[in-house]
Image (cartoon, rainbow, N blue to C red; front, side, top):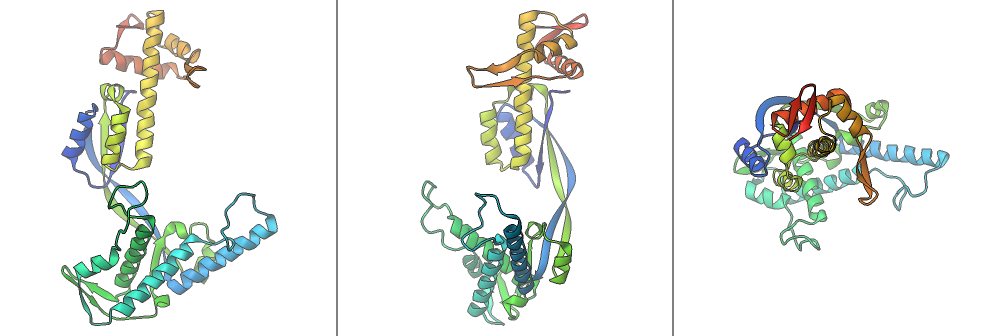
Length: 323
């Protein structure tokens, strides 16, 4: 059916809750579960080597822009070109140093204390945000502390249990191996990575994938404003949802115009409907926008058959007419 639409949700979900939520929004769905493989790329190296690499890359880019020129309006920052990841690495190194100054080898720290250390006080809520909202600075601080905690754990400097953490040792923060998102080095020459001892690796994981399949009646009856709210509440991946929403919206537009054509012209064959759709537009100068419909007869035939199955058009000989 050409009027069906599928929304993919990756990661664990509460299937009954999701099904109920979409049904209440007027879009009953059939859910099937599969498994998708996802690759997470990271770059690993000592903090010293990562900083040297990023600093060298920033210098190389700055020299290149001086030679070739740079377009007006490009932001190079007050100190020239730099890599934002360099700032992240420096902050993480500072957090690690602070942790080692605060806790000594052999210290036993309740996990509640570690959670308090990792989550800074929210302070005043940002302007326009509800009380209790976390400021951007607090969010950044939490990210640095999380990355520092992960590095301490992966370098064997702490040992975590269910209730407590034991500090195993200290080392120069610059010698600690740190993992960064692969995007930090994706544009850097592999030879430069090798020279600085930076290893890129991919971790492949199996992630549950849920396919929400919506039939024609659900697609055509969807209240997109309600579904938008639903997508926010369920924290559906933005890219997946945008694609899904566009598909639903366009199918609603095409269907509405198809029925208008049949109402205006009576019984038509699929090829005639396709021609009529192509010779007109949806919207106009008064609306400030218009949509051109360039659809094949094969697609239109499938569309008309779907509309016939849900009782919106009737087949008469080789043609179709509205009801």
